[in-house]
Image 1 (cartoon, rainbow, N blue to C red):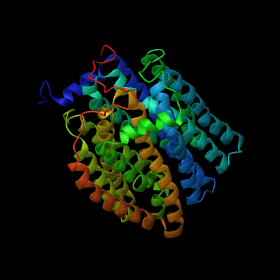
Image 2: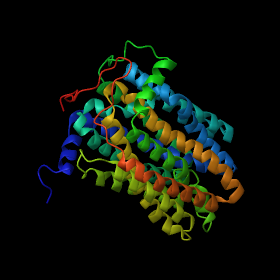
Image 3: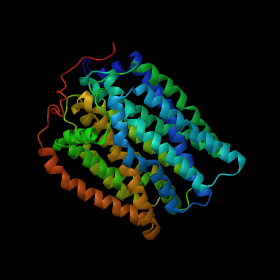
Image 4: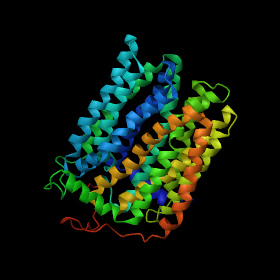
Length: 430
């Protein structure tokens, strides 16, 4: 029986609050549309005759702007009105799946057009996602950040289940057009809720500072001085660069095993979401004050081992099990690392801390997909992913000792006249 004061019960109470509950539901709808498109897009490219390299290039186009622009997005989150940042860039992004629908209906769609639109999505994501990712700490207290992030991870992984399932049905019944239409429609509720949930003209103690290269560099120096944060970012980068490409090349892996079809691909992606949901739900039972490093590291090591296992799987119906385990491992690792980073960061640097997490996760995934696309073309999908998993496992085992021995800081220090952040009460009455 769940104790009255258990972490799981506290998590459910947070989900039942007005602001966080509505934000959680709007994010779920948005991510369902995103995952529907994530399933439809690589399959659409394959039906258009795209090569493995083009699949990797499309993933790179969507993720590459993170490498160049996410630090700008982090600075915008710390210095500008996040309502305007989110609404503006997400509205532009909404036009991209609409354009794909029109291109399909007109019969003029080409792989290069999809890649160009992916690039636009990548740019808008890089500039707006730090503002989005830093919403949770604004609507909960510091002691609830880990719980809020774990709850946010549950909706994200629930969308991994519902999105691919919806996409699979739509693609079988009416084609990829339906999945892209769902994606376009899913943007509007989230934009409206994000504008409502954040206060007008959100001000921080950084508003008076200019947005230039020097101030961004100072931010990075403050964050980079902490070896604990650096180890967490390195862990996320390693798993994203070497393990995450398994999702990009899942269609090829499915086809390489007894010529699997879209239903097997959709089942594997959906199973990844089920695993992620299980992992995120498990994190709700972890005390919010617990050091998350060991959880993050064990999840990353398990992720690398599972990537290796996926390359030797011979049965099409074994893939949902393997990808389900991968979802558990990835979610435990990334959500634990994210919670640690945001809990340690002061509010004045939280947007930039989130941008570094995104740079490691999204940028690492896009760069890894591009490199893996080349190695898949040369070595084949199984050998390429096997090498990725083995290298990731070696690197994470090397990182484990020094990172776990590093002293966990209570908070980041001062920089450029910015004082340490003191504990605060929730910004909203939840």
